[in-house]
Length: 291
Image (tube, rainbow, N blue to C red):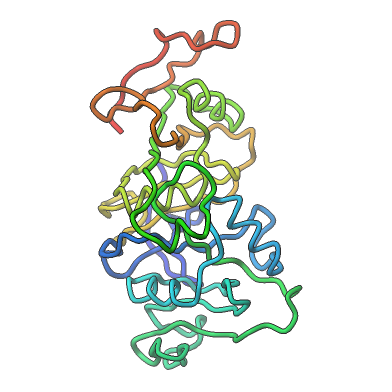
């Protein structure tokens, strides 16, 4: 197992030299309306125009966050040192722990966000050129059954919640095998927004990295502990591994109304080697595992 240590650089929490994560300085769990998460695609940081940022959020089950939503996330402890597009065309980023690479120790926050030693939301203002390249800050709500419509993010009550669960094979699987494993359980590989919603709104906690639909590998931590990426809750990321790389699991998403993978909140582990016969799942090749 990798030796895990916490390092702070550019506003991210790293596990060794390979794992970064979205960290919340506070508990991060006192608001239930939705969750803001930073996003960049496989191509790397600062690769998205405004239109591409909108599309990227939609593909991950969200929409671009509003300035108010980002400010609320900052008050909730979100700390991220890379600038991203917001819904109003501005570019901002939240800093809960001021440091030199992230606007300085006494940098100014946005209006009403505070600044100085208490941090703040750093604001590049409204960009006149929508072709400038940044990351995105997305917002998603409580796991609706399809891509989040704007109305679902701003009204209450929330639509029925779907469910994200971790599927652990007894042998590591590449991305294609992970997708087949989810499909065999009547589910799809979870999107990034769905994992964040499950982490914050449904308190999903799992110290094992798994594939997500965009090809990234991540895992959610509610209760920080040794060898799980540091002392803060958050969603850890191993970036975008090669699709042929074999990982120890996949996070799957089941739409509202679909039956649980097994009674009592159990997930299922794929035994591999004979688990597939003529394209169909062999039930004997699956082992119940606590999610």
